[in-house]
Amino acid sequence: MGINKFKRTVNFAVHPDDQVAGKVADKFLETVSKAKDQAMKKPTLYQQHKAKWKDCTRCLLFRKRRRVVLARGKLPCDILLVGEAPGASENVLGKPFCGPAGKLLDYIMLQAWGEDYTSYAITNLVGCMPLDSDRLHKKSKSYEPPLEAVKACWPRLEEFIAIAKPDAIVAVGLLAKKYLAGGQPKYAASIVHPAAILRADVSQRGLAIQQSIITLRDVRKDLVPF
Ligand code: SF4
Image 1 (cartoon, protein in one colour):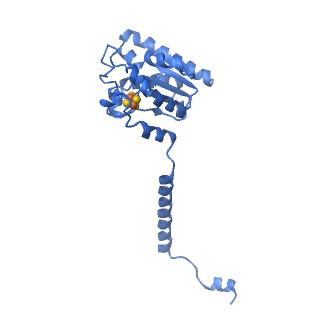
Image 2: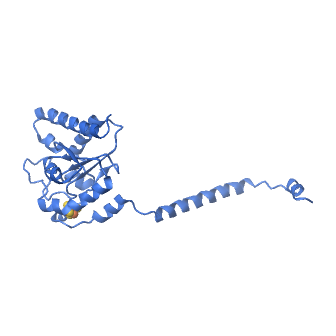
Image 3: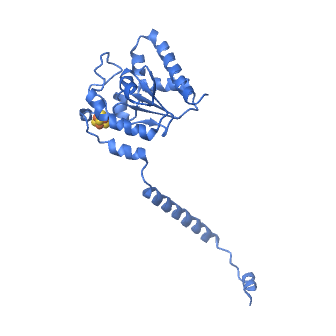
């Protein structure tokens, strides 16, 4: 019997149960293979950055911090905003600008850039909350990170800038401006710190918010006209 006649004679149909079992097996192998790929994947630069700094003890701010607060946003990004230091909410949640001041900053960015623009990231001069920080409720400057902490944390900031590759850096607050305006080539502008806006008299807040929106809008326009 020729091979073609043999094929026509013998029924090669697969039993439905075998088909289901085959699909399950394929799915299983696919999952195992994905898990293997994932396990073998090299950590991203930001993952390496996180691993390197999460237990940092380079300055005394490590003593009372709950978490090292690194960054949030998109990487790489067009615009990097650099604030001063994490506050109480950030210390608990581990993300920069996630408390009341952060909500105001989000509002300012939304008004300046619109909801479709996401090419920005946010970090601070230092990764740990200053020892007596609760900036929203303090009128004094004691929440500011000490110079030693800013110096100790500078390599972390530089490393993050190298990962984020921003075209423009915006200082958030006077202290950030003081350190960035002189020594950071990507420095473009500064805005009032949203915590300072929240501490200000209600009658002055609207103007400060409006100025910040205009500044951020101009920074983006200088990069890509929109
Ligand atoms: S502030 Fe920066 S340098 Fe100091 S302990 Fe925290 S991560 Fe390290």
